[in-house]
Image (cartoon, rainbow, N blue to C red; front, side, top):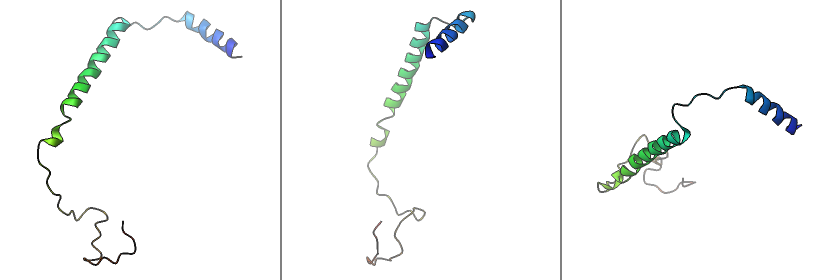
Length: 81
């Protein structure tokens, strides 16, 4: 059955013309490779931005979840999250 189906698909494909390309396939592939290399270069160039400044201690954020402010300094929690 699969052989018959592939024969029908090949016969139907021979009737249609291929879509025209704007350039040969190796030119299109080269342009895509160049675009991806450019994006990789941009990504790698921004990789060390986090190392420019010294680390600053984070302040307590009142909007952060699970800040554990319910005990008020008392360490008798039933579970430590």
